[in-house]
Length: 360
Ligand code: SF4
Image 1 (cartoon, rainbow, N blue to C red):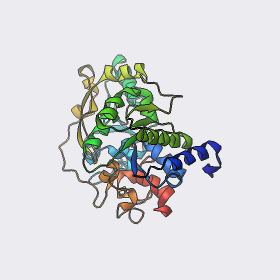
Image 2: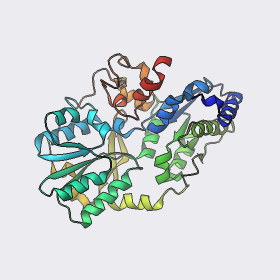
Image 3: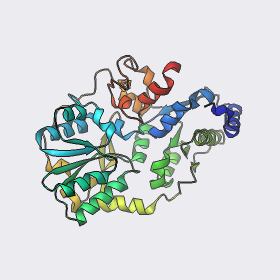
Image 4: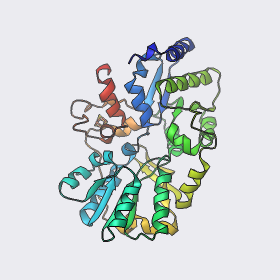
């Protein structure tokens, strides 16, 4: 598809070229779906070279640290449980093996398409202990909350979650505080913002003087959002704007936000590459602690390590582009991934490999 044939896109690209972002502007997209669209439609190649699009920690599979993968693997090794996980997590390497390896060894690991698959299985199989690997940002957390409330109301005692949910705004602030990371503006995630709205980004935009634009997912949406960012920079403004206004409201989705905090409280969380970030994760409230797999299935801590040579940590911080990793496309490919950014369908390395390998 030649997207430059599209009248609207042509207009935006011309506007970006006229704006002459001559000093060089680094814009971080914080959503794996945005990363995929940028690579797939070659958006990097049609905007001025002075605009540097960098990918951030927008893929939940990628930011789950090796320590959590290792703990889950230890649980499957030490307890007779049924583990439900989304497909991408299966191939993420831990320090010694992956969930796929454990499944091949005969462990009961099932792929689910919705968190309710795990709860329904637990209800039908009361003698099995069932763990849902609860992963994702603000977009998916309300679904986990619903499942926990259902399990509580229906008194399901053989259902648990291993919770690795994470919150986006806190990670953005951590990146801005990092002197090694150069970010002039954020292309904010559309799905996450449909839940949290635009308000959580306001203090970040003002304090760090970074324009934020919440973008939709069509190529035109992303290009228009970039144009909005460049206009803000030219006008010396640091606002939060909503380009994706057909879905996102300033106040977000108050019912979904209420659901999240009926079940969870904020807590610190470790992100791959970014380390421990205060208040960037969630823990079950006291009433729901009986669903916490970390409490019910204790395992000894093992010393986790990143795959040798893998630069996923730097890729997730926007310090390195995937092709700057020495393993990219040589040793690390989607059919033999070394790190999570090549495993996940939303990972930056997978996006570059699929769509930008020859341009790298
Ligand atoms: S190319 Fe592979 S090894 Fe390198 S950073 Fe990406 S996922 Fe890790």
